[in-house]
Length: 176
Image (tube, rainbow, N blue to C red):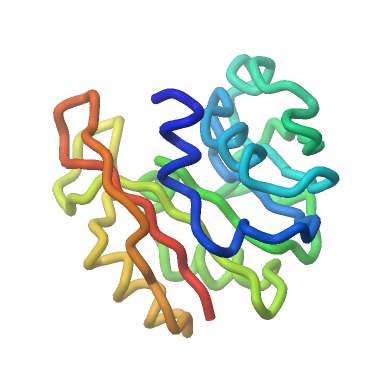
């Protein structure tokens, strides 16, 4: 996916302000969605890019579109996270690697400001694809998952065909 396509999947009214923000991209891979997020954030904002693949992290620049990017080689599920209070958490094609999603959402939501949010990109299926999508979460399942965790709104932003032939990708924004 190109950066502009990824940005279109993430774009929503929340980013249409001049406010500087701090976000984390958990499971960022080679940074396609990290850079897409940087395209949407105001200059002076900051993104923590976290992935357990050091080679993929090397492909991400330390700044993009006047947004600083700090890269961390870590397992976002098992390791501690390198931030305190942030505006948002992006997980693009990463939540499907989390087996205990309830516990994970409880843990990571404690890092969010009161008006903080999650941006999720996932395959719209509940059928596992071994190795690639071991613990999938369809949009319907995502709604239940976050509402059970105390979030009020889980809104579908967009859908995009998958180049791998699996279910379409969807993006959603989750708020309290």
